[in-house]
Image (cartoon, rainbow, N blue to C red; front, side, top):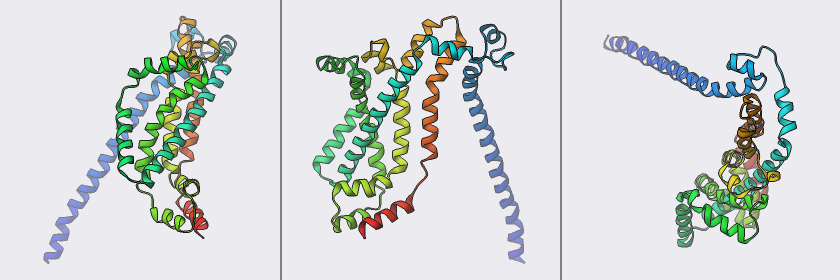
Length: 296
């Protein structure tokens, strides 16, 4: 009888907990949907107005166009060197991100592979360099690049972005500390060298964090305005973000055309981040099979 009574009295508590959990989940979902809608309104405002005329935008900025038009896109491509700016941005972003991620991964691998007082000191120096505001280094960097004749070149801008390798290092080194180092030790015993271990075992194992770092650095480099504005002065070398900034004065009264340039600047970066997220699924079993083949 006592057990029955306790089970009867315990049932409402379980029901109350389940009810509270469901209510909490519903409230969280509603809040997240509201936040998503708030964030989506500016994007919708920019995108939908690229298909409108100026009077149509003034009359109904958030509604659908009365007459859909692509004249703003045609005007943007005829007036602004969009393809050239996209190509410049693509070149700078590709080389900067590839070198940043590679250098950061190699540095993290070296720090994990050989722990010593020297590596600890290097890590401390990198931490100090990481917390220094980028704005304080603009003048010294500009003078150094001017002496090397790298100002107003895409190569010089790529070199400036290589400082982001420090950010890549700190993200990757934290992830590497959780790797199964039994695989690395087994590969060492079987005669695999450090570079072979790095490319065949470590790199596949850290694929999730590499994808995250690539997304962060791609978006940061693609959307960067400060460095591109300081180190580039030629109109032929402008990145797409500089073209958007220049379009503020060029299309001062033609807001639909200005928003069209903005959409063109955002599309490639959005597509790359979406494709990177879709390919970031963990691949533990292929990695282990590849490591087993190397060990065997």
